[in-house]
Image (cartoon, helix red, strand yellow):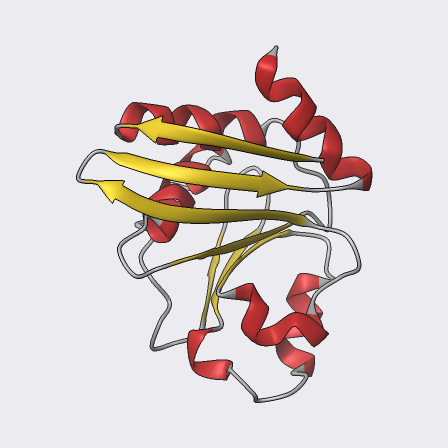
Length: 149
């Protein structure tokens, strides 16, 4: 299932993060992509808050992976520097684990991603608007279908 929407302001981004957080389950994976400044980390901050994370969430660009504790264990991965690196067992341990994983630049480690997961492609429109394409199948399709509810 696929849906396109425009997020007008941070409140809309927070509402989307809150919506998706209602559906998480052990092993939930969200792949984010989009240009620098498109809002991937901002979305992840709102998503983490919705999952009960109280620590500051920031981009794991230089550490590649950060772990947070909330109502669910959250792993935030930035795969930008991993392009062409091949499979990585330590990353796969979290992606295929029992927690929730958010993977920025997921296409760079496609071979390490599960068969089905939720994806969001974010595009910068202007200072307050982001265009989002969200896709998912299997268990993830309901998240998208319920966006209209």
